[in-house]
Image (tube, rainbow, N blue to C red; front, side, top):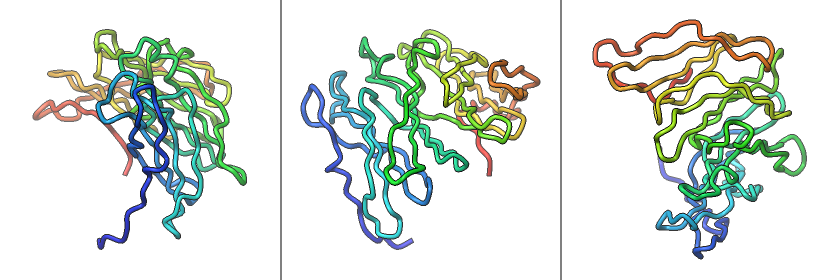
Length: 245
């Protein structure tokens, strides 16, 4: 665990109406042998007009040098990612400029194509296709299987924390969106998925639960709820994220 070096990403910061923007590297994952880093791109004060276009930086882990960068024009506050090895597609969740009147228009799922000589933004599924509210920027979950190679999940969240959270299944190629479930405002956590089951954490105080949904073989059918359980019956601590290990 010896420190080796620092890879500066300052040069990849964009601009905004407020002026200077910080690159703000936020999340990282391995995709197609590269380290992909999402840049949150907002000024030092997190001001409403201080967001720059989201971006990705791809780093070669052999040379520790930036191999490519991908702009996400019109999308702000981009953080959560998930990678689909079978199709070399990367999904990026963008929440839009917080509390801006146009936030839903700046929010969506960016679908990145890494299967080619030059990584590129393939298309965007706007949050308008879900329920018109901004997406939860902290996560997006792919569930590419042989029978459903384009299935993924995302959630919307009311920036005022009043309206319920909503979880959706969507087709990452064609943008078809199907509701799955709702929960009180800011209570839906990041889910996990197995071959046939979706596990959704719901962090209600006094009534925490993991809800299970049976995944259908088609993307046009809402996954039915099959059961739920309290993950911490001793302390009832609220679950915020669930994953495989």
